[in-house]
Each structure stands twice: as structure tokens, then as C-alpha cells.
Amino acid sequence: MSSASGYHKPVLLNEVLQYLIVDRNGRYCDCTLGGGGHLRAIALLTGPQAVLIGIDRDPDAIEWNRNSTYSTNSKVVFSQNVFSNFDIVLREHGIDGVDGILLDLGVSSFQIDNVKRGFTYMKESELDMRMNRGDQLSATDWVSNASSDELASVLENYGEIRNPVRMAKAIKNCAFPVRTSSDLKNCLASEYGHSLKPDILAKIFQALRIAVNDELNELKRFLGKVHGSLRENGRLAIISYHSLEDRIVKDFIRDAEQKCICPKEQPYCTCKKVVQFKRITKKAIRPTEEEIKQNPRSRSARLRIAQKVHG
Image (cartoon, rainbow, N blue to C red; front, side, top):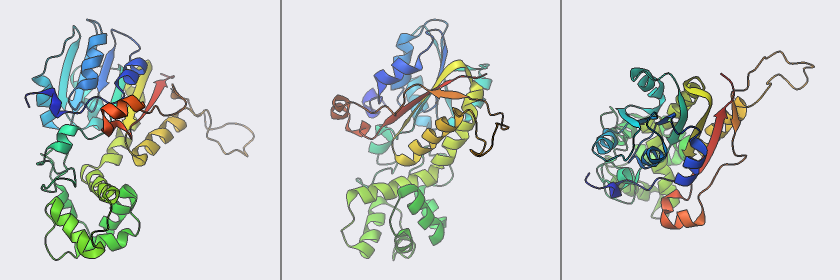
């Protein structure tokens, strides 16, 4: 990887910088580093006492950033790991808390455009879809090992496919092994003809990718750790790209800022719930029309920001 053009432009960059940085000499952790666009921009705004941590489960991303130039006086460290293990990474580097945590849940353009990674239906490639190619199961393996019921559940819950049972049976009963993107499309064509629209194919690939990488459970594990890893008034910034992720993030923030979860009919509070976060913006921040023109892959992005309010 000899140039930064292999990775996508950092989405909602100005908004991330505006809301995430609360202390120029603070500690900031980008848990989905990718090409380092967000972290590199943060590095330009932080001081010599700042510590910046970049984490990614994809070894290619870590290698790219270690070989890249970061114009900063801040300390920068990188670690290859899943983002839900960010707390382990912090402990390994002797960091007991951070002022900002960033999570960009999008698949990088480098991953999408690299035919060897198998993330897109628009190019002929092996059905891989692993964020880390060192993980055990590729999408081909997952589809082969899954039962028809398991596949139907994934298509319904992760791809929001209508009549997922029919589609799952079509894939599992395919007359030939499903090993490539063309195999999958041809298999579906034998059941549906060539009437499947691109957005349906995108949802199928999204569903398989989420299953292969355990993405939604990974997000839930991450969210369960963020409060304990943020310093007082530290901020959490999460960029999501589809409703499944965004719903998890929105519900997490809503529950974390509630004062009481006792039944409404109960005359007084007994839950003793402690408010952990408050929203910085009432609604999710969306990219501007100008950003979408410059970077069409940002069009579905939603940024939510929350601030820790209790130790």
C-alpha cells in the first residue's frame, strides 16, 4: 500500500474533530483505524502531552499506518485487535483512561475495492468478507456450515430480507458450490431470475458480512466497556452506516442517560440508576450535501456523540 488513496476519505471529519476533542493534551482512541484519516487529523490538533491510540482488527490497516507519516508531537501507538478489546489495548500501554473514543463502523474503500477481500457483489471475487483474514471462517465457510434456518435468520435480521426462508433454501440447495460473488448471484438467479435489484444484493452481502465478523455483538461488547474507560467528561463518537448499528447505539445512549428505570406506576424510585452519559447533539449528525458529492459512500453515515457525566 503505497498511497493513502487506497483508503476512503474520513467521513464527517470536521464534525468528529469539533465534538470529540475536549483537551488538546488528552488521550484519544480510534478503535476502527482504517487508513488513519480521523486519527491523523486529530494528531494535527493535539499537543505534545497527548496520547493517540489506533486500533484495527485488519493487519493491513495497522501495517499501512505504521508505515505512514503522522505530523504531530503527540505520542501515537497502534495495535491490531478487535475494537471491543480496546480496554485491553489501553491496559497493555499503561493507559488508565481516555478523553475520547471514536468508532467508525464503515468498511473501508480499501477493503471494498480489493477483490481479494470479497466484500462487494459488484466485482468477481471469492466470498471472503473477513475484516481480519486471519480469522477462521470466511463467508464461503460460513454459508457452507450454516443450516438453512441459520442462514434465513441472518438474512432476515441482518439484511432485512423479505421471505428469507425462500432465499436461504435457494442458496443451500444450489446445484453448485457457492464460493464466489458470481456463484451467489447465479444461484439466486436460478430462483428469482435476474429480477433482484442491486439494493437487495447489497443487503444480502451486508447480512453475510455482519455474520462472518459478528459485528453487532462486537458493537454491544464495545458499548459495555466505554463508560469505564472514559475519563470524566470524556466523549464517545460513533459513526454508523445502517439502521441495525445505529439503533443499537441510539438505544445505548438513551438508556445511559435515563435517570430512573422503575415502572411508571411505581410511586417512588428504587432502582438507584446512575446517569452515565448525556447526548451532545439531540439527533444524529448527517453528512452535508457537499460531502456526499465528494464522497458518495458517506451518504448513509450517522454520527452520534455522548459525553460521560459520572465517574
